[in-house]
Length: 373
Image 1 (cartoon, rainbow, N blue to C red):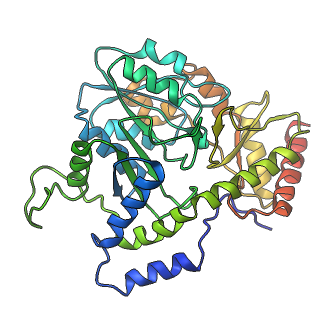
Image 2: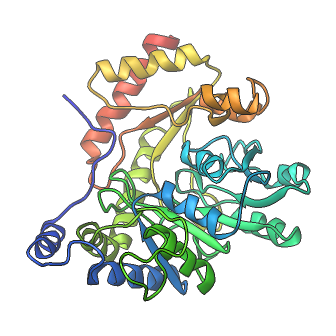
Image 3: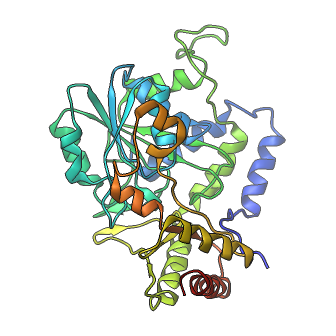
């Protein structure tokens, strides 16, 4: 038996769309790039989109376009995938971490202002696991202090707060399309903004520093090869056309997990926040009152039973090179530390059946019995 942690939802339309590009002479910088960007603008409700080869590249280019440079500070969360913080470091700036809210697991808006200094230039909040809670408050703080707001929406395509879509709260936002996300392009990401100057700069930076209308061997600035091919974009066009279907499927799986795990008192089951639509990226439970070692034993026990599970996340500030660079230690962000020591991501994807979810729940309870008694 093997129940996978994640699986993409690829149909015949996606396969045909990719094959159509492969039959054409335009594998990159062709018409599918512009079509994908236009479709994304329409879905999110923003003026410009710039498709790139990853969410990491997208965050990095946003920072460069905004003029973030060495000596600057950017506030973000220590409870995220590593790329949120490393993109700041790639731009030469310093990530300044703020501990998280224990319920939403997002950066705590109430703790942000105490970390703002004269060197602070931007905030990069993350809608962790697809949960948008607090993003509206963070936008108000950024506006109050004259800071750039870059939404790391890489896990939250389709989420809303009071009907307002994530990706529309900051000057710029970034989504990502790794195969475990709500939709996929294989690999890829996209930048959204209403600012033509920022979008034009990102377009140049992703394409080796070329300017608008300049020749292939004309380069106006230092740039990068962060392009997204038409093959990827063709896949993305079809996947994006199905995004509401995907969000509904994932919500159904999440609701079933919530139902069958409701009586398990040894875990905290995630819930959708009030006034929000949560586009579920992963389904992460937290074990109550456990040590890191006990949580890891539960992970091992479940894997031995044929259930793919993972910890989400390892604390960013305690990654070895982060400790060396920034000097953080256990206890600097206690809510993050405690959360990271307790999380288990369960198998979660669009077409996970109720029968498989029942097996996951059964094996989780068996593992908890074995480890915790």
